[in-house]
Image (cartoon, rainbow, N blue to C red; front, top):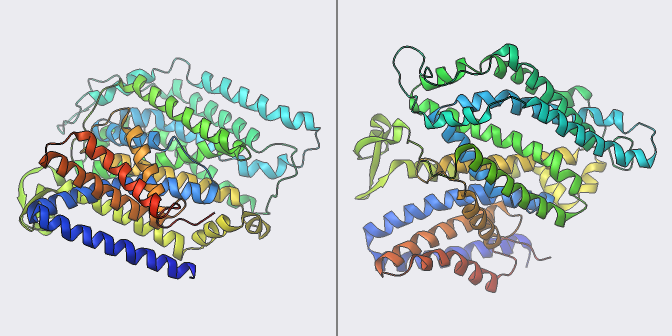
Length: 497
């Protein structure tokens, strides 16, 4: 049977089984419980997809199992919560983050010059190590006497007043520009040293496609401009955002979390993942260690406590909306769906998951980038021979996957507790989703996420109805995975090795 026919057959079989299960559950649970539980399952499925899609794309193209993906989901939640509650910390750290990323992104610009160096093999190995050590030293110097703990504590202050004056009056002001400007400069230098090391000076064995130097420099130039802008607006931007309508503040929080995910993912791929492609097992250990470092850093900055992000006004007004139009007009917290009251914010999370699936599908099937990604999965050497920088594609895919995880984190913030261990749970569920759908298949990740979300929601329903242990509901996800693997060891949409 042709692969296309196999895929269609799999979809039809899965659809038939799901339909039969849905009918059975509807008849058993009744209309009201069925609709409410199904919508809860779709909400969980959307969050699972935003974690699993990044995992699946990263593994499908790069053969990288990222065990820090859950931690990056958690970081997205913390970044969004921090900006929505009080963005002082975000804008205090933003120049440093952008500056370091700017330096790291110079790797593709300086690489064509560094590979021309005529140096011995001994120095080819020694120079990157020296550069990494110097980068760490400069990084430490950049943050000397920088009170990051005080900045992090600003989120605990309810500075949400919209009255005239400075809403941050009771919070310590940002460091004066005259004392701060040298930090971004040092961080750009630190990033440049990392770029120097990752470019491997003198190593000519790797294929280096000819590209316009100006095109390579576009990203670093944009980041350099953003560094200057972020440095100048450190004090004014938090005040302006806190005086905004809560809906706009939430949109900005989503954008900031996604952009942070893109930058963080790009830096991690260039600095930590790229040197270890020839040692896959080391990547597993490195990402696992990175997840521990991120979790401990979060606990240091914000304490091992659970925080709750306030829902935006569009989802917080009392009363139940009769339809979507009334909800958009009044911003009700709940909406009537076929006689069932359901939180409007959870509908937004469902929409977010479907939107991301549509975006990923368009990128992968309708764009030139998607064609390059799919070709890179099949034969990366041939793609390189055509003059396409596969490493840059790898960086984009990794960064895009992390950005999706960060988006899932900020999406979960208003209805799940934000705490350091939230990433571990979603990390495991993300891997289970990928295994069910098939490694490397974003369609499989979507179908697997919906199946897993529905399984977990109905598992909770039956556990409550039959007075069973909550552990039974948690085990439902593993049971689904075992059943799928017994029938199709490669997953629903995975390919046989």
